[in-house]
Image 1 (cartoon, rainbow over the protein chains, first blue to last red):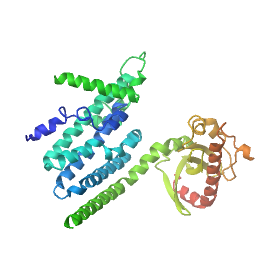
Image 2: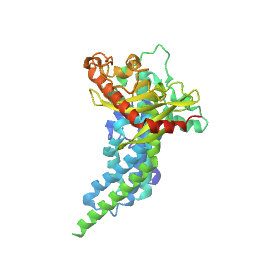
Image 3: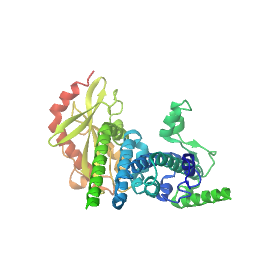
Image 4: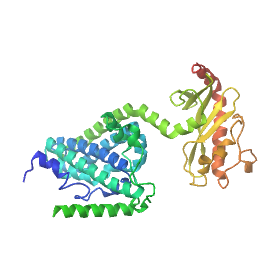
Length: 218
Length: 197
């Protein structure tokens, strides 16, 4: 059953939204979503890598010999990951320090390799681009959702961070310093629920959100 | 056979392309990354040492060749005169390399301030060399040209309690800095003249 371009895009936003539906790439998902800012940063870096690698893999799909395809995919993905790493160091250094090892680890992220293997190596460039955009945006939204829930309950704050703050203030919405400072969601009497910031809290959050998604599906 | 050649060619071309792209991006972002690292890693220490300077020490910097390596010097302008520089020196601490930023007054060779930049010391023990201001304060006003030794080694440096190795690392870095300073002083004073306004 051939899907239209629009369907290829929207499937990444709900039907096959990573990491909830695909349940791939959980390690960075759970590790970086302590705050919204980290979630956005990871999502954007991930989307860039996914889009670039999907386009290149799709463009080269007839040239790459099947026997060495995984090696070729990894070279392509690793290249773009290193590009992202350098760019983040140059422009968003504090965020780079916070995400740390999880940026280089995008190389072995199952979703990126999975899309290259299962989709881009079989479909055209346009479809691959749209697929990567859908998956990337879906992943970013998931990380933002997880990050918001964990940050709001776990530390009682909501921080959009300097990267998205800079973009928003360019469009005249608020100022950079407004978005950079953590917003206190609850009053000063709020006791942060530390458990949510820790790794088990991430699993509980993910499970609850998956549960809610399943409820909606029925 | 043909398949084999194709595999080799494709992998080679891909690797060449990847290497080229990375080299280009690296070249394009090198200066920016250096600036960011200075601002976020060394910046706090530099600004604390050269506090009250009327210029921006991070942007007013220059490099000097010292034997094999190049060293960065950060200029501090006080009362309209560029008479202070800060530079980094390294010693070996308990957990590995220890970076120490040293500010020195070029008029009387006395230390203005000392700050730890990078370290991997035990949190709460050796790391107090960075967080406890009284440790760094003892160096203020001491002449940089002498040798630095921890008191238990027969020197004058008050060690952070329980962290003799860390303190020894800082002492080594300071002694080293004195050597560097002595070697490069003629060039340093020459360079500093251009920053005096």
